[in-house]
Amino acid sequence: MQTVKMVVTGALASGKSEFIKTISETDVVSTERKSTDEASLLKKETTVAMDFGRIVVGNDLVLHLFGTPGQKRFDFMWEMLSQGMMGMVVLVDSTRPDTFRETSRIIDFFTANQKTPYIVACNKQDLPDAWAPEDIRHSLRLDENVKIVPCVALDPRQVRNVLLELLYSVLEFIEEG
Amino acid sequence: MALVGNLRDFGLSEFLYLVDRGAKTGRLTLQKPGDRAELYFNTGKLVYATHFNQDERIGDILVRMGRVTREQCNIALEIQQAKQPDKPVGQIMVELGMLTQAEILKCVRLQIEEITYGLFGWQEGDFRFEPDMAPPRESVSIPLSIENLIMEGTRRIDEWARIRDRIPSLDVIVRFSDKPHEKAKGVNLTPDEWRVFARINGANSVRQISLQTGLGDFETARIIYGFLSAGLVILTKEIAQPTPVSPGLGGTLTTGPLPPLAPFDPDETAPAPGPVAPAPRNRFTPRSGIYETRPGKEAVLRLIAHFGGAF
View 1 (tube, rainbow over the protein chains, first blue to last red):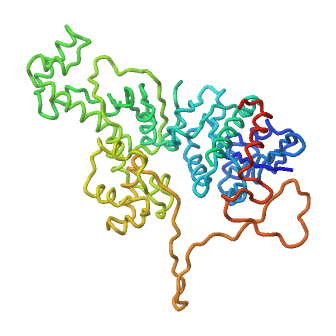
View 2 (cartoon, rainbow over the protein chains, first blue to last red):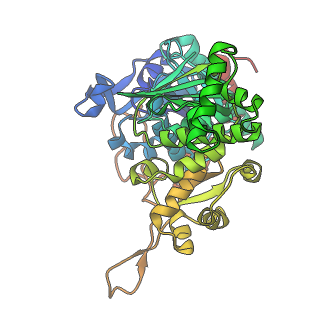
């Protein structure tokens, strides 16, 4: 059995859990519990350990999807979760410019020591005050070669598209050697 | 679509950077209790600013600067109200020979800059950017470079908290962004800023630059914050700093890599018996724990096909 791993990361309440739930074929293993700190202002149930989803292709290929904990006090998990990943989706809540700085920090963390393909998915694009992906690109100071795509994490078709875009980046990465 | 937020979370320098890089046209309204300001942009340049608490009309400014007398100003205003309501009062003054076009433009430029620099001091306040909103018709617009505004605005920052948002540690390395010289062409730097600029080489940390220039940590970080805000430099990963141990041990400790982590397999229901083999620390290896970090092309193509993609 060949196993590959993708990480879904982003700031608190960016939609990581929903994203994984929407695409996973099996029940998502989630260790969510009621928030007790400032996070509760943003999200009733915030992820304190991880979300894990699995997608099986044929009988010999498995894709594992891991969501990173959103709260800063669980940063120590990021290092472990990032080990062995072939690619990463960075989710941004397009309606929350106050989370852009945190998103930049997360991208810096995951890309500082390893060259891993990643894309930025601008979630909640269905909401009226969502920032356009190109505005978010400038705000996050992303290079032009970083893919940034619109997304609604509750929509399976759009989540599939995000994963596809990441897979195309992984393919380019492999071909470039 | 309007862009809304609060300066507490997304500062003015960040927004100006967005306007510059996105070559945006429109109106940015900043508002907090009892105060309000508007900045107008045209294709990424600031062209007009107004601050409702300091709403000094151009005629008043010219009087204050001694360019025209109060009587001359009143004459121009009367002509504007009676005959030419759509014409800027400054333009009327030029036509009456009271002063030159260049003097008017210099005065307006000063006004726009001072309003904008004052706004950098806002710790919080709602902002709303509405695309394609033009300045009032009677206003005089002057396109101003955003980079210089950011640099001057950040010179007025005097708190660590704001700087720390962008420079979390003094041990981060500073290097130029991809085309720094092109971007730097229009930016004017103070001598201290040049001292810092000259020591940015992709190897020096903020702390090292501070030591080399003798400017101190805060001043160095503040200057680099300005460079960052203007998009001139970027920060890269932290360097390991030698950490002295207690006297007598005869050596120093350096920050080294953490011990390797065991591979994690969520499909496993129970840990394997016996000692866990250490996972390779180098994440560039093709395999990390149970995962293939560089799966074969075939596996990726199969995943693409699974999600309905084409290749």
